[in-house]
Length: 166
Image 1 (cartoon, rainbow, N blue to C red):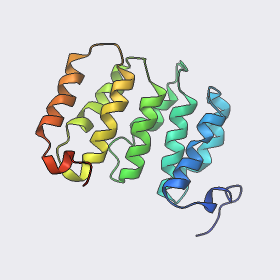
Image 2 (cartoon, rainbow, N blue to C red):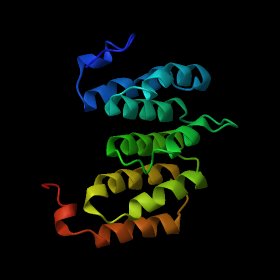
Image 3 (cartoon, helix red, strand yellow):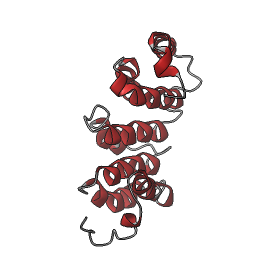
Image 4 (cartoon, rainbow, N blue to C red):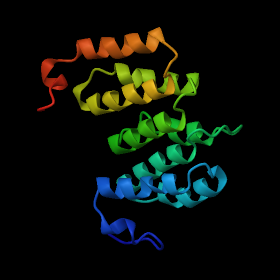
């Protein structure tokens, strides 16, 4: 694997750890949306999907609690929620939950609700991440539609899917 300039520290890790390393940039750069996103941007163009997923997570963290007319978190993360590469979808789903926690952002909830309702077993992890991310966004709203979607999905899952041992 060819190490890109300025990213050697990331390549000292493998897979999910690379995602975590890049994701922590969001905490270091938190609330500095303009400066933070420009630092994170180069990781979005990496050839490694785990690094890209970390960059998506970092974008969400940088935007946590920040109100911005451009809404960069939704623009960057929203397009990856249904990505065929599950690691990218996971990074964007968790990133949205962190970025919009407590905001009751209807656009985010609209993006995440279909992911919660997907019943295919290969998308189970995405559904499991979309539920708490939606919960973070809609916290204290008593959103009956979201609550129903989460409960419906849980009831429709097989015992094998819901088991921690699988």
